[in-house]
Length: 209
Length: 183
Image 1 (tube, rainbow over the protein chains, first blue to last red):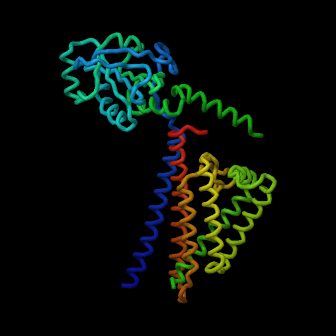
Image 2 (cartoon, rainbow over the protein chains, first blue to last red):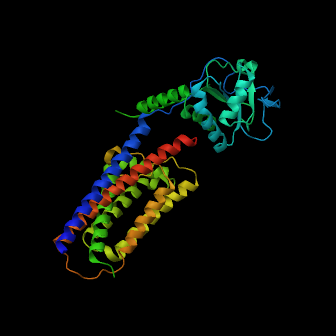
């Protein structure tokens, strides 16, 4: 009996060590992933209003007929996220729940926008995705004013009315990168990569070899 | 009264920890001097002396643990040293200087960057608490070969888990740096 316990104890110690090694290896892999994977970001078009510009308030009519204002300083101190979607775009459909949860988490005012097609189609889409609680603007002018060319497209306007970021958003990461961009003050992924390169160069020059 | 095996294991673990830390501070003295300076707790003129004193203190305590003087005054001194480190980190966290390196890794000359966080304070306090456990007098019992095996395996497991925790702290810091703009 004692022998059995001794063997079992030694065996358990070995298992504990192996498990600890596995945890260490996993943690290291996560660390390496952080280093290797550049943060994913929304691709920013060069046309349309520039990031950092003040947006002009514009009034649009949403599906319910209510007038809503987009752009300019906001009255309630919240940033506005405008997401252009379309009933015929499958990626948009997948992105809508992400936008909803992000708007809640980051306290954003969420506005959906679209254009063309028949109004009934948009109304069915809104019911289908259960986004009737949010303004849904069908306006070609709105899209043109922000140079929206591909969907799903998102624009983030800060509480101060300044255009914080914008871009073609295909995944949750892209959408999050817009908010990240507002909080960090880095305009786009392209800028971030450029900045990291310059830092690398500077640190290389600073080190005696 | 605690079991002598527990007391011995704690002694060996602290001997390893302190000697490795002291060796690291000597091997990468330049980067440790910079790290210590970044804490902004000591005047720059005293830094080289402080580095020698800290490394010497750690080495001395490590050797004392190894020689078996652990349970008693050495344990209290070690706990005090760890508490002092925790306080230094906490002061800099309050100042908002979270980006500075803690200077507490064992990465050899490569000096892996480990930014400050409250987890480091917690880690040092926990280690200090373990040192305090060793001040409890140990019961006397003859240790057999099996006890030594248990001790060795426990040390290996503790070492690997310590590295794992350090790695997770680095990962956490890397994530945090993406979330908040640095000063």
